Length: 127
Image (tube, rainbow, N blue to C red; front, top):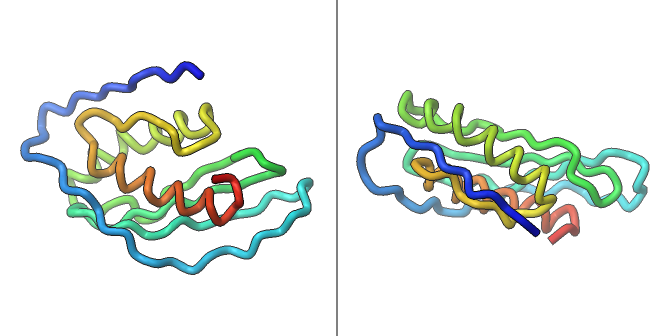
């Protein structure tokens, strides 16, 4: 599978990224009826910029929609999230998995997104 490397350069960014810490989140109940769309919440991942949680919608075995809940809380992180999260969502929908590239310049947010996404995929029995 070809994956293109997504690179976003943020000139306003300074400092190294900090890895998030995974915390528990309640799981959604799995339903095996494939004609309905089901929603699965990923774990909330704490980052320097605030918590991030990915929520996926699945129909059959296909990810149909992704929403990032409470992406961040600081003005700097809002800029990152506004630019990085749409790229991460598009990459996920294309790959239909958590095997996506992190967004250059938004490593912390990308890693938190992928961690929460992996948790949601496990709950959906897609990982």
